[in-house]
Structures are given as structure tokens and as C-alpha cells.
Length: 181
Length: 204
Image (cartoon, rainbow over the protein chains, first blue to last red):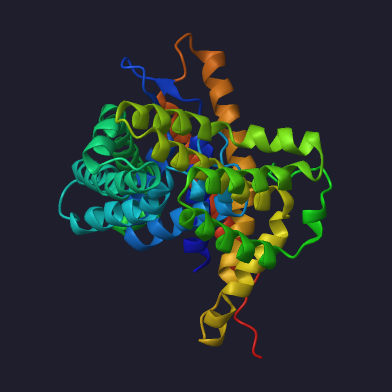
């Protein structure tokens, strides 16, 4: 019990710290932040339920007014903004990522985590994100989807990093990777 | 720990957190009901007025917190002008600014601890159902403590890298940072267990 709570709290903190990593800009001029990688890691390392709990904890702290979102954003205002769909999608994305990682127990960690991070951390995250943008900005689904396309290369890089990190972590501290224990 | 709560004393600081949150919910719903440009402009004017009550400095602080919104405001307006619906674009842009500003106002004038208390109060029905909500309060404290510790350790590792390598700090640094963090978490958990573990829910 204590162990699970501290690990969940730790990963909530990790999402926040990754949001503070200075963003770097892709060749296409689209900035990418490491925060999305934190969401993926919650799923691939902690598994479905605990990963989603860690993300919910992180979002709760953002709502309570801590400036933990990438770029120092936070407070209740972000839940009234155009990116609210992504915030709602974060815990779902972590859950699905974790669920797939758990289901692919028979597969080595790296490919399993990679597939989970791409399906959960990108595909599943984009659906509520795009729906949120259509609702808040009065765009059509097609327009909102198109505006997200430039972010996909960066997100694929993040999924690769998250999977590599999970695989190394599994080698170094197998018992801490809850999605596999 | 840095929070977004304003250090400028305002009349709103004295209001109860729960009341402010309830009012925010009602006001946000109302903003989505107002459909016309004059209605929305009036709504935004009221919000701006609320920011002006404590004075200019508070108003400017509020504007700073709105920075991330301007990009989307510009996007929406340009988009709707291109589509030939400038008016509906204006309504959406005004609503966006007003809704985010209003929510920020609650954040800026409510202490973190007070909001945490509201959350625990909202969860109290779960407690009477037999669920233990104490771990949540405990987890919040843990995260708030973990963040600066984690940042500090990350900084030290990055400095160690810079001292030893001519190459730029790469993503590989993430593994040792995560490892240190996980080891810390396991130590904290062990220490908690050694001190009697999580407190069981109080019998009432």
C-alpha cells in the first residue's frame, strides 16, 4: 500500500518535472515538450490503474493551482481553455497505455511499451483532445485533426523514448515496473 | 513551493473556497449560454471589472496568467474571418478569454490548502461509504515534496554530465534521474512502513 502510493506520487511529480524540461523545437518549427512522455511512462511503468491514478493526482494538483503544466501553466483556467480535451485525455491515455503494456506481458518490454505508448499516449489522447478543440474553438473535427498533425513526429519520438526508458528501467529495477510485476 | 495564488491581498481572498468554486461553475455555464457579441462583451467587461477591484497591479498579474490563451484567440479569430463568420469567431474568442480569466481569478485568490480542504470535503461522501480518502491527502503532500527534490537531483546529474562530457546533455540522462527517483520512492515507502504505515480510517 505505502509502496504503491509513493510510486504513484513519484510519477505524478515526474510528469511535473518533465514539463519543466525546456522544450525543444523540431525541424518543422513545432515545439515539443517532455510532459506527454510522462503520461506515457505512467502507463508503461505503473500499469493501467495506478498509471491513471498518478495522472489524476497530477491534474488535481494543477487544478488546485500549482503551475505544473508545460510552460508553467496551471490553475482552474486551463480546464476552461481550448486544450481541456487533452487534459481529460491524459488519465485515459495513461490507463490505455498501461492496459496494453499489461496485456502484452508475453512480449519483450520495449516493443510492448512502444506499441502501448503509441496507441494509448498518442491515438487515445488525440481523440478527446481533438473533440475538445472542436468544442472550444468551433472547428470541425477534420480541421482540428489537421492542426494536430505537425505534433505527431514529436509524439512518436516521445513514445520511443518512453519505451526505451521503460525497458532500461525493467532491467535495472524489475520490481518497480508495476505493469510487469 | 511556487503556486499561482496572488500575493496581493484582495477582497476575494476572504471568501470561502467552496463558494467561489460553486460561483465559478455557475458563471462558466452562463458564459456558454450567452451567444451574442454584446452579451459576451458585457460578460468579459464584468470579469475585467472583478480584476480591477483590487487594483492595477492585480489586473496586470491576471493578464500575465492569460498569456497562453492569446495564441488560441488569434487562431479562432483569423480562422472565422477566413470562413466569413467573423462575428461567431468573436463570440468564441471573448468567451474563451472570459472563462479562463474567471477560473484564474479563483486560482489567484484561493490558497492551495483551502482548495485541498474543499476536495477532501467533496470526497467525504466516499468516506461514509467506507472508502479511505486519507491516502489522497497524503499523496498530495508527497507530490508537493517530491517535485523540488526530483528537480534538485536532476540538476545535480545534469551538472555532473556537463563536468565530464563535451557533448550536450541528451535524453539518456532521463534513465538515471528516474532510477534515483524510484529508489527514493522505495525508501520513502520503507520508512513509512517502519513507522506503522498508512493510518487506517478513523472510526466515527
